[in-house]
Length: 278
Image 1 (cartoon, rainbow, N blue to C red):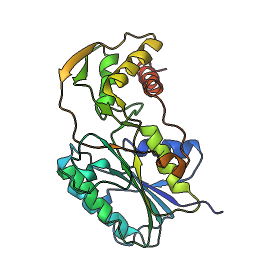
Image 2 (cartoon, rainbow, N blue to C red):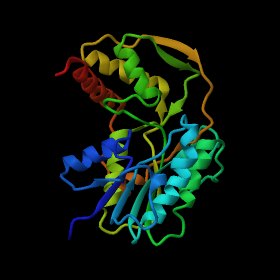
Image 3 (cartoon, one colour):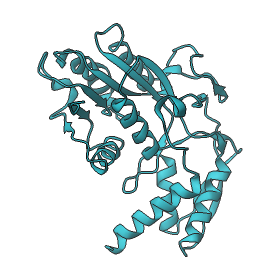
């Protein structure tokens, strides 16, 4: 079988950098998209597989339309031959359905904010195409070895600086997903020999937020560092659904999702090595 021509968008981003690290480790050739998605010219791209990791996050209100909506449209129009597109979307397309488990294939698409609407618009650009699309709707992604993104990244930075870590009251389940597990899903989906159009949920196991904080405390102490100093804070419970991701493991041949202790151990090891220069 000839080598696939793999194009990666967002290759230097939070997720994309972990996707290309995985490709490099497996010695799989790939190439980055040069420039922004919205600058892609019609018919200017040729690829067998597109791993679309580019996207503007919720806080980048000024970029949501350009990157998530119009950028995806430009990407599709830029492909001059059929390709397999692996597109990373978000549970934000479901909107405020309540903090309960949503089974795959259930739930109306009714985004409740600009971010969710931009992600749904991106998905719509991938409907009814000559391309095969694997859609991965993800929950909160965390665990990058060197970058802070969401709350679960920032608490590691705070704990390493011996700052108090906020502990939410009341407690609530969370299904944040490890960035390297997401990268594994993206790469495995792209390399499948017989791609089929499908929509899959990407989520970690639902577990109490307090247990995630406890896992960070354990990982810190395992590294010989001071444990977590907790500061109880009143926080509203999210109205975003938890996603049932049971089907994705068998569908994409994924390893089991790592435990929170293991994820935090990796993060602490990477960040303390960066700090010490070792």
